[in-house]
Image (cartoon, rainbow, N blue to C red; front, side, top):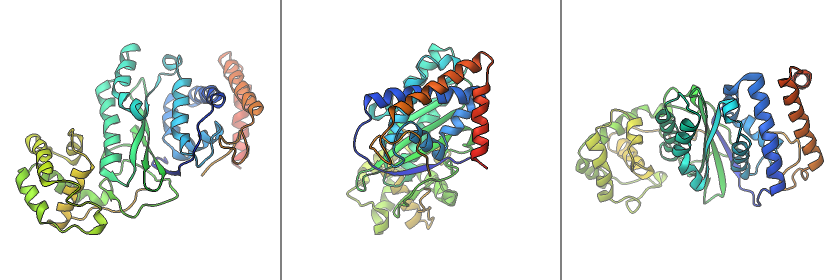
Length: 357
């Protein structure tokens, strides 16, 4: 199971309307075929694979190294599923920018509209924790701006989210698959996919950071004034990229008052507390290392095909005629399969068998 990161350079330009409309149709057909052949749960497994997702984006007409691939493909799939949610038992919440903040309400709305038996609170927690981990527990310099949460009527889920590094103008995509997450804060990403590793990061979900997570949890339960006292003593090494001007002791003490009052029992519980952000976690990590000798991991936990051309004209412009033929062939195959005539779908399987030999 390949889930993890994809690290991408930013490309300019927008997805033209004529291309997005085709992406919606072709994306819907692909999902319907997967659901019919392998089941809805298989869709989550494939979307959580950064290799497969990237190839899907290329199939739909995006360049493999275009950062717009993530947001546009997720948007096209969400639009393509409109009206098919009940049939597939598949739902897509969230999106780019402010739309990502609507994810919890999207989940609740789906649960109410379709009378789902799943517990929306559990799904909302998974959505929030996956974002909190990638923005706070993994501090790699990428600020999240896109969060898409995909789930089934049985409660299975996957997450596709993306962050941007304002300095390097690069984007990094994070993939989660709920069935593979045994612990939100202990290597929840099963594999990494990127073409550039960052040097100065804090990775508190690395298994090597277990002692640090425990120490941070203990510090979170201590009196705030004791922690800020230790923090004031620290001489911060350059590699930490955090200075006293970044987080004032008074602000740190105010935030730690929340943790002290709640007495969190685990690092995951610490992360889940509202107001606990990257700077607070980094400060506690520094205290753990420099005052108590508990060193966290600074290791960065971080392929493709063209079928219809690329949005920006690379390696060649999108061929609208071929694109429309692909949509027509898949839609016809789906209709015939529903009528019991599955020859075309079986032909696709034979083609896949031949191309993998």
